[in-house]
Image (tube, rainbow, N blue to C red):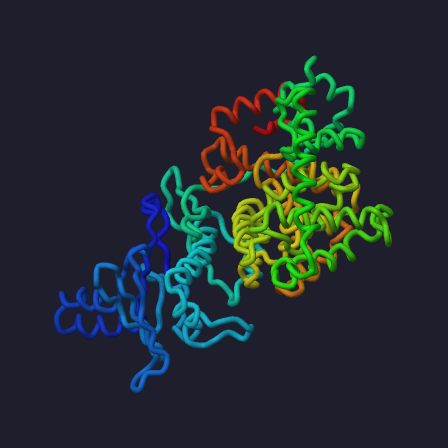
Length: 546
């Protein structure tokens, strides 16, 4: 298969060209009889169609007669093929190039499953022809574009299952259309260039102090210049003494615009609401509970999880008040949001909040605010987490293209080895004091910034993964082994530098719309003004969070 690259790429259309090498002999024979008849022979033995027109295909793996074959069906009713898997049927790129790829369908593994334990290409084609076709062609496009515009990197050569031939340099217009990836309807699409600026290590800012926070309060206790304050928290976190107060704002327990008098009223109402819900489950009799399977199941799961949550911390030692409060809050949340209830992992999100708040009521409402942000992490079908893993894969393809290419080769592009990072927001990768700082940064950051942090964590291990040729199982083990060995300052600095790369690409109009929406980026003009303002106010740091 060959992707037409060059001037026609501006049309953003992909074509499939398949031409048997034996056509030359057949066309020659036909031409000796009548020279003008060679062109019909060419049309007979080659075809092309636009990728989006592919409706489906028919694959005959074990025919009663003849060789296995594949026929393509287009949405206008046309049928292309069949392509037979006979030893004499070879296919090459068009136009013909003596140095181009020559492989039979057998060599291309259409009908022969590879040695690795994964479905063969034919099997994947049968299950989902459209997805498989696009995914396989996107890999070809990545390699073809490298050859067309400046050669292939040594990393790409390592990943190819066979030795790639040397392609001639294609003629390109003065303003070439360099292929790059984005996502459309879940598929990788090659269109505009994605040339990132160099990743810079960004110096982190200082912590927000109590004195600095007071400058953001008016005489009524309302918080002023909220965006500016959140920007400072994003860049440097806050002092320990401020967390009990500011976390309530960051987690939507207390509105930023609330006055001191209004805050007191909120505390009273929220306290009343909490204890009312707590009494609901506390007063359920054993007889009632015997007919309430879901409640029994969740209470049992809570007891098991609480027993193993942060037991290394003094606050949650055996028979401590902390364990009792952890249990009560989780059971009360089960009544507050019975549709979601309790899912394993929630106790990890609550424990740091309880340690900081030192109040059952305050910890509960901060926890409820936190879960509003990450509720989809706990979908029973894991759809929310899988969506984030897919979004992470998109970001990795932009920020870490070499790692992305390697993961594709290892069938690890599902990013499942990052599942734990996303589920509990790195809770099991850092000690408790580092989690305080990381979470407050994430709460003040642009939407889905935790995915940028995942990219920063992968940047630190990508060279080892690639050079060690780790398969999926080994990648999963290595990533899990990095727990408590990740340098938080370095991760945050790298993540901020990556976000700046994406902002710079956004300025040049090369950032996919999906990423713009994912990170809640402002309009280009607003982003430029923000970067300009930040550059003047803080030398060396040109990023502002909108």
